[in-house]
Length: 181
Image (cartoon, rainbow, N blue to C red):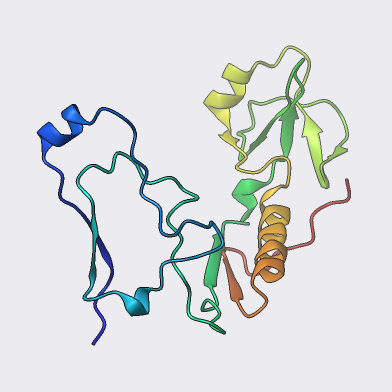
């Protein structure tokens, strides 16, 4: 039965203080060589007490020839309910905020406009963010990036690990394509 490899650094505190120079631990003289775990005697790799660091390029562990990593399985959970979508926006000098669920006291300009794929009303002139905060809820995804972010994550996962699998669980039952940019 194989036990996991454990690195045992058995240097006393005084040995660290007394170490006059840096002493790197390396697995082989050549960077192309690696430490074959199957050849270890036991499950512990003992590191000399005068070792002061293990460089990231110096300790190379051999893999099992012909092996491949297991596939990844990821479930993406996303809230795509109407609370994510704005129905009123407040244009600002640096940013535009999206709001929904506003009560009747919030005034809007006549008509609607398209905002990141959503048809929205624009808050009337003079309306402040404080007024909207008191009478509305902040839209969770006014720029419509949640769906496209999950779609990109799934594409990236498929490209990096073709044998992996992904699932999407949504609050409203479907991920719509992101609005055109």
